Every structure is written in structure tokens, then in C-alpha cells.
Image (cartoon, rainbow, N blue to C red):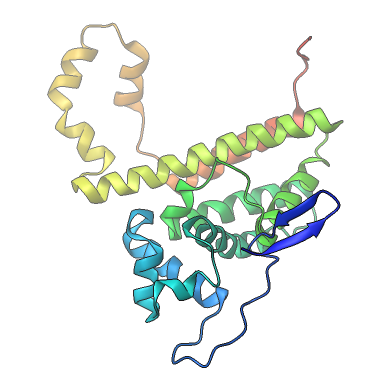
Length: 248
């Protein structure tokens, strides 16, 4: 275990701050970048359930114990993988205007989750504190701090919370639907068609008039267009703020 002395005592050094192990005279050279790259490929192909240090070691052609020189376990491996995925998202956040930054980061996050579906499973939990993850957090926080309705740290926290709630929910829902289509061979439209007779009987009772309108009049919206529209609605709402303040 790699420790660092601080004014508060010895602390475990995060994987991003630990030096790479010294190169060995071994047939297979290793680095954290290579480990993360191969792990991402495995997770893309088999999901997080199909990823383990042992399986990764086999894919790399090394013994599992050798990987522990680079990562202490699966948790640190996921940290490395997630931060690699955040790299292009951080690049997308380099916009001049606050609104453009928020929109670009959100769209890049969706794109990353659709490319690496396992990434969506790791959104919404503890903050991701790798260098690229922190760069994304800084870009979003700095951008929203410039929104007209954000006047202090409390407003900023609420704005970030609202935006993240939308982003995580929207991305996870889209990824879940894609997985469901693959698992069942039935998309949302076909699913509803299959339940058509039952749904018609229920709607004819008159107890669900608004649901009936959605089913009969509503179109199957394109996921990308829906995401862009809803994201813009959320961002514009954050920009305008609320005329009412919650009294404590």
C-alpha cells in the first residue's frame, strides 16, 4: 500500500498520484494507460459484470498479482477507466460561453455513455475525482456560476444538482432502453403494439384520459432530439431561475 505523510498523518495515495511501478524485465510491458484501455474494451464487450482483475490479467497475458502493482483492486481499476472516459468530455467543456459549455459537456456525457454503456452505471454515485473528472466538474461549476440566476454558492449547488439529476436520469433511461431492446428483441414501439388490445381496453374506460392522448396523439420521439430539447429546457430554466425563494 502506497502511503504519503501529511500534516494529518499517513494517507493512502490515490491511484492518480502514485508513480508508475518501475519497469520489469518481463515479456509483457504494463502501464496504467494500457491496463485502463484493455479494461474499457472488456467492459464495452461484456459489461461491468464481465470485468474482473483476473479476466483483465488473462487478456493482458500476465498474472493477476502483477496487476496489483498498478491498481489495488477492482475499485481503483474502475477509477482509472472512468477518468479515461472523462477525457473527451473535459475537452468538450472548453467553450467560451457558460451556456455553450453546459450544453457541450452534457452532450459529450451522453455520447460517452452510449459508447461505453457501463459508464452510465457509474454516474450518479460518489463524485469521480480523477484529473479529467475534476476538470469536467470544474467546467460545469464554473459555467453555471456565470448563469444569470446563480447569485451565490447555494444557487450554484442547486443548479448543479438539478442539471446532474436530469443528465443522469436521461442517460440511464436511454441506456436502459437500448439494453432492453437487445435483451428482448423488441423496441418500445413494438412493445406497446404487443400490448395494444389490453391498453385499448384500459383506455376505453375513460379513467386515463391524459395517458390516452399520449398514446394516440404522441409520436415516438428521436432520443437525440428529445435529449437536446429537454436539456435546453433545463438549462434555460436554470438561466432564468425562479421568482419564488423557499423560506427556511
